View 1 (cartoon, rainbow, N blue to C red):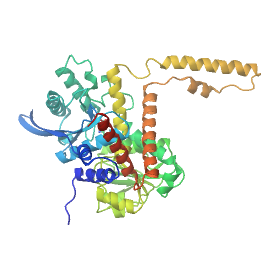
View 2 (cartoon, protein in one colour):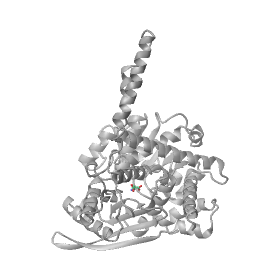
View 3 (cartoon, rainbow, N blue to C red):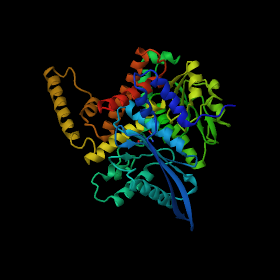
Length: 474
Ligand code: GLU
């Protein structure tokens, strides 16, 4: 049996497929592909009366734009190859969606479930200090964010650690994104990756050629979806798609098994259930199955792998029945599986596009931190006043016409309202997701040799990175 390819190998194979179609010198191509540097830290933290040594990484894949950006992951499986692969994906993702960052990623080998909150804080602050000392956390150079196993809480500790070590840095808050609102976070960051999945699917379904390519028809309404992973990304994507777009979540796959219900699963109720019971097993009005693999292979319209890398591989790809897969996780489909699925005409909306909502809203948060003001603070009431003027004008017009028509109360309310931060974040995210898919679509339609969205996405990203090197004269 052939040895399984590493995560970095998989990313590089996907990169090479697209790079073969780009007019680029071999030297520049290699420069874009390689990971610039990876810092490994082995640090000790005294816990429970004993010093424990932890291993953490921060990989910097490309500095063609700075700061470099990417989350910090906590998991016992974290390793150098994984963070380097994830850092590469960050480079391509940021380029594709026009977020002006290079790619980075961090990871700490730790199972956060076996430590108390105080212990995790101690370990996080120590890891952050190691990175801050070396400018591997810095508002202008390297800006981490949440990833698997981390969230607002860890980002708050990191931001606080940075401001303690760099008290005169006026831009200290911009050293990390995904912070709680009270610490300079932005409305809508926690839900951003899930929201991005929703916007990506909405844009996909706006084009009937794409929908037909996947062997589907109509809109998202009524589409039957399998979600793998009910963490931050899977939960928000499933919640928005079922509550706002009429999609039906027929199966949710979690660590302990899968639950299915043909009429649809109430995602909010399932989330509460898993928090109280530690898994999906026993969730009312659903069918429980284990092992998990079989659930991925169930019939559906859309499959959303939203957990971790490599879940769809050469061993199960032939059995996947979904005609459309959207990669909410990073790297859930291996390069071998990708080939098998393409041969089966399965349409894949790739990770570097699909889950870019998180870093996009991180970008907005970083800009907010540098401007030291929340979005909408200056314009909101001014916009309301102007809209009020238009409504008054409409009122006098309708009275001049003898009350033949007057704006409805709901129109008045909606039209008048000025945009606040969450409205602007959603607008910016929606625009980003639409534009990037439109660019990929144009490549898919016009470029010879491109027949899938992943190659199109890499191609758009590589061309933008190459151009940024070229204009600098490299
Ligand atoms: N960890 C997320 C990702 O993989 C977000 C990164 C960020 O916001 O910098 O895209």
